[in-house]
Amino acid sequence: VPLLAWLERSVSWSSEALLNLILLEPREIANDGAVSLSGPRAEHIIQVLRARPGDTVRVGVVDGGVGAGRVTTVTDRTVDLQCELEVAIPPRPAVDLLMAVPRPKVMRRLWAQIAALGVGQIILTNASRVERNYFDTHVLSETCYRPLLIEGLQQARDTRVPTVFIRRQLKVLVEDELDALFGPGLRVTAHPGIGQPLSETIRARAGQRVLVAIGPEGGWTPFELDLLAAHGFQTADAGPRALRSDTACVAILSLAHEALRAGSPSVE
Amino acid sequence: VPLLAWLERSVSWSSEALLNLILLEPREIANDGAVSLSGPRAEHIIQVLRARPGDTVRVGVVDGGVGAGRVTTVTDRTVDLQCELEVAIPPRPAVDLLMAVPRPKVMRRLWAQIAALGVGQIILTNASRVERNYFDTHVLSETCYRPLLIEGLQQARDTRVPTVFIRRQLKVLVEDELDALFGPGLRVTAHPGIGQPLSETIRARAGQRVLVAIGPEGGWTPFELDLLAAHGFQTADAGPRALRSDTACVAILSLAHEALRAGSPSVE
Image (cartoon, rainbow over all chains, first blue to last red):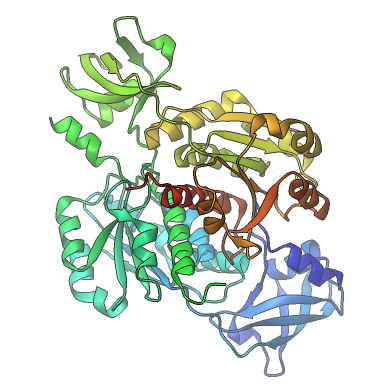
């Protein structure tokens, strides 16, 4: 089937978001598996995948299973699919992110990348060196970030939408809420050039969830570092070079996943 | 010295490019070490570092050593420094990048990030799935990319400007030029989910230079993959998730450096 071959090939790096998986909301799927699409996903199936009736596209349900959608009808602007979904749900990524809110332009770029790299939850927080107006921005509203998270999941073929928590008080978050949000597992503060290598630190604790903390522009204050240390965060070295926070975020999530894979007994 | 303390602290993740190092062109430095700056670097020293005469800023020479610049004079828009530079030159990063030209918007964002992550050379190439007009863009001109590379180096405190090669024929590049450009060392084509893990592949060959190939949107064609394989490229798995090419580029360079560090006998 040429379309499936295309889909396999398309699991590759791409400059623009590819819909390697068409993600559906549960309410969009009828009891018999029928789905009627219009909008960007239909346009993608029509214009990029060039699907014809009888072709199959890869589908998934938000926070549910993945499967195949057989194209039954195509018009100029709509596509009907008949979907069969696996019962198994992809596991939630084992990495969580605690990040001081970066400037809005940076945060807008990061949402899809974070979802594509895979995190279970995104905890955004205030910090001394975060500017107050970073919180009063559309970029932190669910109407803005949810479509970007979905875009990242469709790129990476995942269905698990990261949970997002936004907190204006780091101290309250760390002292009163974090144990409930994260619980047991490895907590690390990533720094350039300080501490044991991040990958070694995570490998040594593979099998546990990992929460990685990334500070604001200019870094955490000594008070904030003490607060994090007092609540179980180890300092780990993510390499000798000082990176912009968006580059650092992608680099650190990538290192964390690779270290979990390498440290896991179930790795091939 | 408060300023030096600030400089140390500032080696941290930041949302905007920080000048963690003020990079100077050799021609800007008088024989006695005196430097007169105006423009963005002077503005940074005046407005962000708030340096006063007698303070010291961290400086480096493009493709040369790093050192200290003592501020001798500050005006509204100019700064004079008296520089002392180390003779030793930072080593060239041991990772090289061969990348199919991504779309201009993506490439513009990547230049500084690639330089900050650290590569010895950036070889940009055509490929079947690269659109022809990607080559006819200002983003591939040295007047555009050199300042972005310098920005990334100043962020990461490096002085070694990556060498840039841009080639319109992948076959000619790989068959006739690559041995001279790269020579011995590990050549890998990074793919999601195919081959041995990238980090293991690189660890096993630590001590050698690494050339990482990243394909275009939609991937390399089978012909291109065969061509790369015939010229020594191993396929390596950079994780199970399909990423956008800019995310993949940052993730893969980060993994490559970490694997070299972990595999190196000189690691702490």
